[in-house]
Image 1: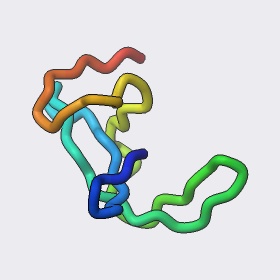
Image 2: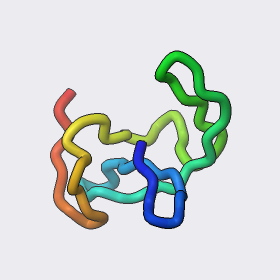
Image 3: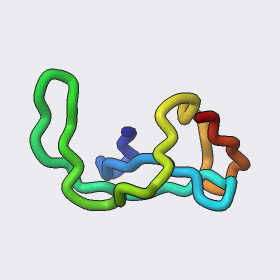
Length: 64
């Protein structure tokens, strides 16, 4: 999870092998974990590592 210059929280997901930004709404935070109230679904492929410096539209490959 990242924040842009305006303070908007977002994550990057993989969609059709490209990085896509998704704005999210955060809920409670506890013990290093964050509740996400809106912005992603259970089927989204969230990029959890290597997202630093990733730009929307960059090609990505998901490793499972």
